[in-house]
Length: 119
Image 1: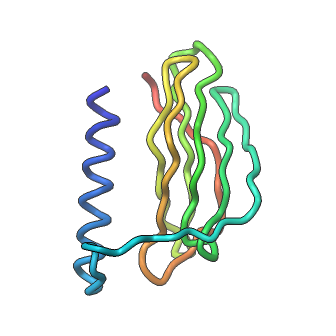
Image 2: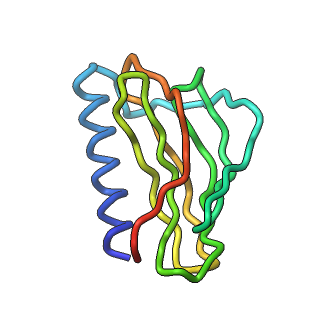
């Protein structure tokens, strides 16, 4: 459980640093996502129901752990500069986690796949 919390805190810190670094105001700003149709991706460890949003600059959805194998699935998304972003992981079997990935400013996502961590 500590790993997931740390990821959320780290992700929030990175998002805040990015917003402050670009001069984007956070207070009082509401982000409205424009999303396309949902689709599902699968792996031996689990599955994810996701959708691309905001012109491919965001990915939202849910990742599910469907197998009691000691591996917790997550979503991995490749940005247009080749760098990868990863979602929180789901696990153990039956657990779910939200997927909320945002590309760095000026970039978009070009690929998405399932990955996992040992848990």
